[in-house]
Length: 289
Ligand code: ADP
Ligand code: MG
Ligand code: MG
Image (tube, rainbow, N blue to C red; front, side, top):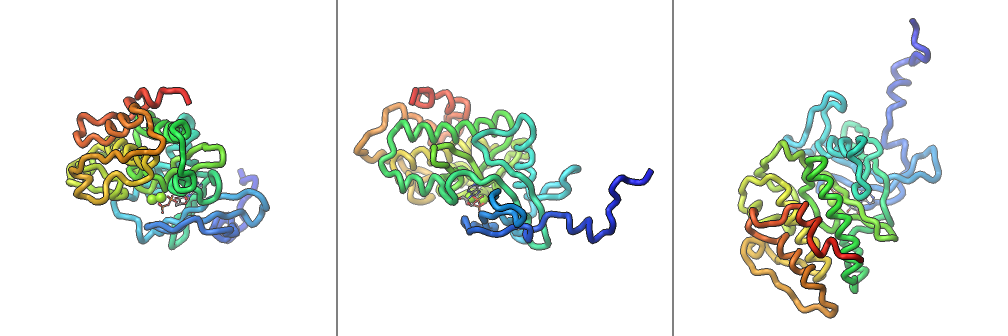
């Protein structure tokens, strides 16, 4: 039986593949260690904007390629994002990949834009210096929900939780982005640190094997501290390893519950550190806004 719509020739098949030339770049949203991120729209449509993350093939580390029967060989970032868009694994506080494509130089991750272009939690903390405890909880809770979903449901660790990787819209709806350091928990324990030094747990900096979730919880502790005190808890690696936590005085002091949660996430004793389930059920998290 002949095919109903046989492709006329190879050239046509090739040209049907999506390429970066199908887009008009609207603006740069940032450039990181592995490439650039752009706000773009389809040439064929006026109004549908997308975010495109360029992942330079040359810069992808050897052990972060993954082979998959369905996807072929892709960077782990794309594999994880593809997993997270399957039925039952999507989450309202996790960025969604629409599509991906590649050329000789790059992979391109096409995502739904979230929020005001380029507004991440880092900028937001600057902008809203007087963030009240309720607002802070409202934002932090959504990050915790995302991480809880990753650890408990998807068995994924993010490994680069920080303010720049949390984006918000005008209504304080939050999404966790940047799965460039993420991994499947089953492939651990890990021994290489992949995230951002400021957010690295002491045991990870010491080169001890780590499962992943405990690193994410430590990073959540750094994140909450940063939101509450508007500064980093530790100024260098030595301080991360053993400086007592500074609790600077605040004009509008946060509740004891809040400070207790920060300290319990920043517990240097890995066994004593909260897991994400305990974070989610901490009294401060359960309090009403
Ligand atoms: P990198 O791995 O280089 O850090 P990210 O994935 O974190 O790249 O993206 C860089 C920046 O681009 C983010 O900090 C954020 O400001 C912006 N960004 C990325 N993805 C989105 C998105 N889906 N919606 C809105 N902003 C985004
Ligand atoms: Mg990032
Ligand atoms: Mg990254």
